[in-house]
Length: 172
Image 1 (cartoon, helix red, strand yellow):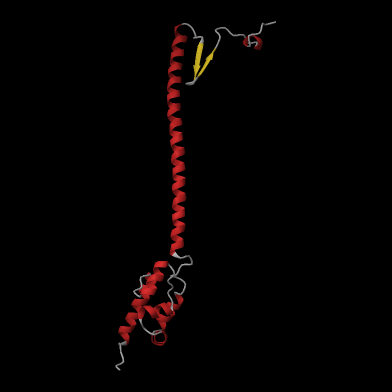
Image 2 (image 1 turned 45 degrees about the horizontal axis):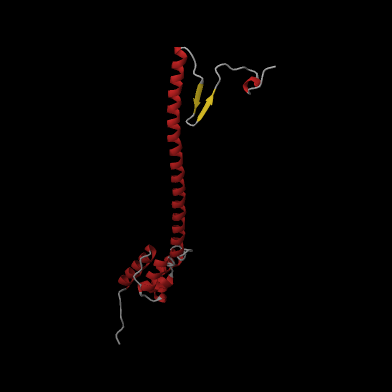
């Protein structure tokens, strides 16, 4: 049985490349790739061993700096919340934002309708003001004044300041 020997420099490069892939969250090893997809990949000595194919004790003895780097990276890459839960949360946030947007657009439409109505009403009132100013300039006020688009208020030509005269009761 032949023993597989790999030069230390080449093996170190393989371990460094494996550590780099783990840090980026792009491992080649299937189980680690699945963990990365789920968002539960941790950069630690165990995952470095799986990714590089180099035994743990060999990494610890020959490459203590890389072993220490993998150990200090321990909880950095992994997320406390799996990606599926994060995705579900983002979908709920998106649905909530879309609902708020729809409400805002509906309210905006309502306000635009009111603005349009008020613009028409202002235009009518400005026309009426111009008409009344024209009547005053030509000799006399009209007996009926119009306020707004729906309200008609009749005003007597001569009014008394006493309340009874306005209510139709005789003045005493």
